[in-house]
Length: 125
Image (cartoon, rainbow, N blue to C red; front, top):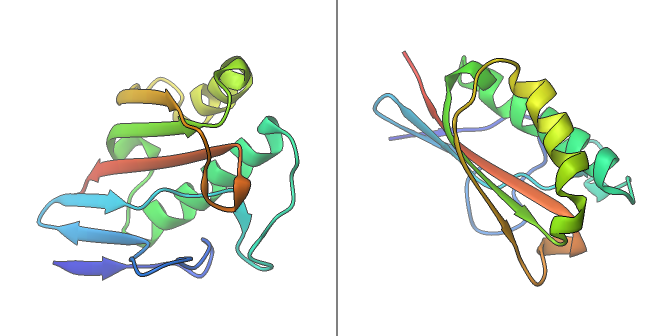
């Protein structure tokens, strides 16, 4: 088991690791729309928050030598599924033709009152 981290992704806001590599699998913690430089949520709408979450995930995957093409499973947590279309458009653009398994759920509240959080599992070589 190996802890993976990136300064280009937000530091953990609790007692957990940004990601853990176990064998050929990378388990990424849920990424919030925090700007890693300020550790603040700067975007107030779903598009900006989703873009930041995807940028954070991209940086964390890169730290493990991976990209979105390595993701086998994603879980999207949303405060309001009414924002699904906007989130999904940006998600689809980030993943391109690669379509990992995915679950999307609406939750009552997310950490720091964010609108979206995404976690992924990736397969590494």
